[in-house]
Image 1 (spheres, helix red, strand yellow):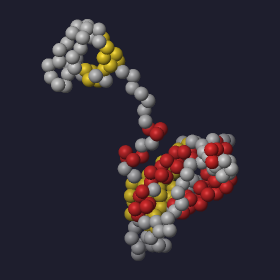
Image 2 (image 1 turned 90 degrees about the vertical axis):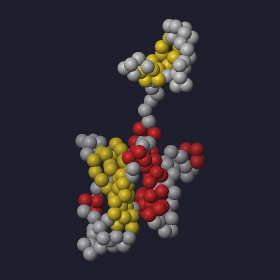
Image 3 (image 1 turned 30 degrees about the horizontal axis):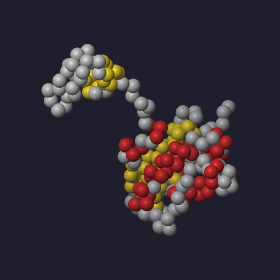
Image 4 (image 1 turned 135 degrees about the horizontal axis):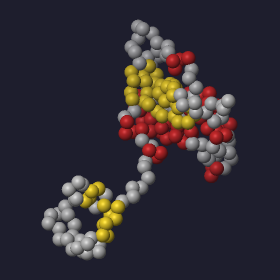
Length: 196
């Protein structure tokens, strides 16, 4: 049987929790090689400790020996006081970090340290709460903010047409053509009009 590894990690947002004291946890959707998907919750301090340990395990790839060899992504240290604003602002960095982490060479991205950090823990399934205290507040990442480099499509192949006769434009939204001119058409409507 093949060892478990992570195919994709997506940051969903964060939660503000109030037990045992007020703190923030990030919500990640982790997609595994067996096609299962699990939601895990991690504090930024945990993520940063994980990152530091990963750098120690792979000193060459972290750039400790030669900065030019660095392939492990950078992750800024936690601030002395992490409030909601820094938690929110850090989401873009974490999205990029997770994307880069999963796309590292297999010796890093599939190492036991990475796999175990993103495995579901008991507190991911049922977080400890106190019924006397407020329920956690959830802040989801907007859908358009989740787009990353891998979501960008390739170039669009346009159809090229040749004008068979001269055409004088009749409005500012049209273009004049001479017979033989080549035009790349972006969109063609059913009426025959083209967006060039």
